[in-house]
Image (cartoon, rainbow over all chains, first blue to last red; front, side, top):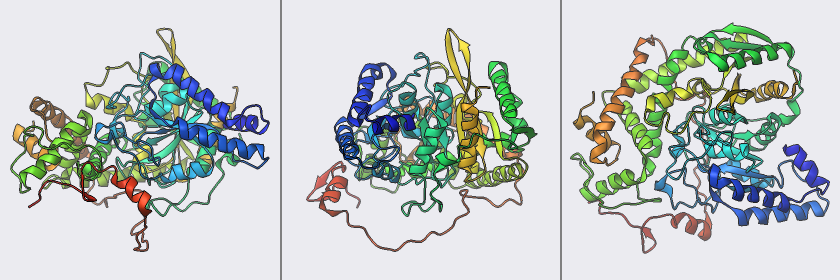
Length: 485
Length: 95
């Protein structure tokens, strides 16, 4: 879609200002129902679009992304724009700088329409945990869009943005992409700078694109990837143009299907998944069964490490330097402590009022896992199991080039179906979290739909690739997408 | 199950004030999830080196230099402070 719009801009069939206005019109018409956006940046967007149009009018070369409207998840800082991460504790926070990805997008002339809704601090799998509002699945508005990047995904699926950025800590780009029939990519850990992304779990978080085609995801990755001195974990990068690797040829590529993932599959998702496996075979790939022996331990490992990192990362939201402050609201059930009571109450009250239920639960779990006497049993143990999970992947990738499974064990569920039971909600991430634990790149793309109640509920397939093999991964998904088999 | 006292202790360590009505709910939720974490006990890890992250990179250094954000940059940062007095962020007494 990006290339097509780029050609239209080039041939003067449309101007960037017109395109941007079209998208704001679509937002005005649809977003009251969908609820994808938390804030709009209309003035800046139109100003930027006008600038691009002048450049095109002068006959200058312009970039693929230039003049094309996008949406940004509300946990990524855009200079001068409200950035809440879906939390009341940052209700009035105006980001004083651009995240590295935003800086790069601005340099390439991308037009930012606004910031999108999300589960508070990206903690959730349905976007029902946003402190502001729910987002509806454009395919069936009685159902959740998935999460935590539900707003970014719904904006693209509903035609309220050409593409968007999300963030993925345990599947927050891929699971909603699967629920809403779009493409979502989680790059290799370190491929994209996390500077300016509000940290949830620093060893797992990655920013990635949400698009209507695999080629679009490749184009955006080319723009945002690369080493950054502001993020010490960002990897040296050869500045690839990922869209140049989409050959449409996957002959001889080896796909592994983990027996541990498909053992429990049933019903329509199983059928659709098996059909997609056949399609990969017809396209020339070979398919074999593999084993990830520690797969069963991934979910508890993930939840121990993630909540531990959360408890540490979110300590900064304390009512002192920025964001909400609540002083001496009510008695906060404080235990005796060596801090002066007034200061302690500022911390306790601010976080009591400013943070939501799921965020508090995860901070407390992490605090418990890191606390004296429990550290070895939980955090250290999980770090060891993580090493074993990485080893599973190293072994698997000696045998095959890619690992394939459904993205989620289910289609989009109804509002309220899981929100009362945190453990049930966590199981929604069962296929996606291992990519974050192992750090490998993974992509979700549409492979079919299940009919339910007259609606076609989308199913996504997930490919995981070797570390830093985004080009191979994208080509696999692209070849699947363009084939008419 | 975690006791009421344990929940209040964790909450205070985490600097989170709790609504009275939520204490019991967290006792239940946290206990259930911690039980689920116990699954890892089945996994043999005796000779395994723990990893903190996946890249294997350690100790990335940079020049110890400060960046001046300028007056506008400073104002943009400071306008997010909840309470100010004489150009400083105001907090409750520490001593």
